[in-house]
Length: 335
Ligand code: AQP
Image 1 (tube, protein in one colour):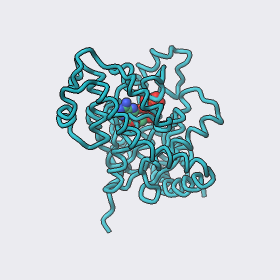
Image 2 (cartoon, helix red, strand yellow):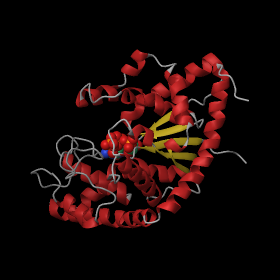
Image 3 (cartoon, helix red, strand yellow):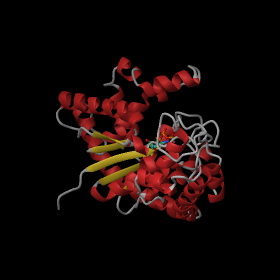
């Protein structure tokens, strides 16, 4: 049997619910890609520790994120869907890779620069600084061929490639050098109230965020209140009409239709009609996802069992890579 190429991706359990940007920008693509790839999808809880967390809440968010992966169509019998901290090799390989990463090199990561300037030095921990190295370990442990990511993560995958090449040239071929697959700009979803900022789990206000696990009527209300413009024409123009353009992107992504066809359908009609139709599309898409996620969460023991079985499979692959790395860098094998 010809083995499928490997894929790795993950999300942070940084909120009780995922938002529609996570769904359109990541989960919908993962769902399609899991057919052609041997896919590893992780809930990256170690990364989530870079922000302050209540321990019980973090555990709950981790389960909830996993449940939403499954509810959105990631099949644990087809893909390896697991919790990052269940596979100890992630933290161990990150240490080895950190000894091969230049301080200046890590300091050039723009996401760290953005976040540290936003939070201030006291609230910025070393984990946030080394986060891209842990991400490199996540990817390299699985001999990953492709990494589907948003363009904000591109620099981190470049670092991953550099580290893989550096290790391979120093110690012999050990890691597959992964290729980033950058999501299309059209898959980027913006905040409904602030349509020039990316929709985000950690947005300051949730008025412009559509949550997967929200009551459908709540999401419909948020859409009806979304920011538009005074032109009154349903037309795509990111510069002049970011609010309407964002809603057109959501409409197109969820229905599989082209934006010009949607513009035609709403020609001569006001924003009220368009928003109502979008609200129906959103409710129809997320109603079943929400129900399935809540069903899974009603039986946490079964969900934990599925995650444990998947972690065992991830462990197998990750341990093989880590043993090879330990041997190559000269760590004495325990007999
Ligand atoms: N607004 C978005 N549009 C399209 N794709 C998005 N993603 C996130 N927001 C949008 C994609 O979802 C995945 C989530 O990755 P993450 O949880 O590691 O962190 P993130 O990208 O920083 O997502 P959030 O929701 O904004 O989380 P917080 O607030 O915790 O930082 C990635 O594939 C991302 O591209």
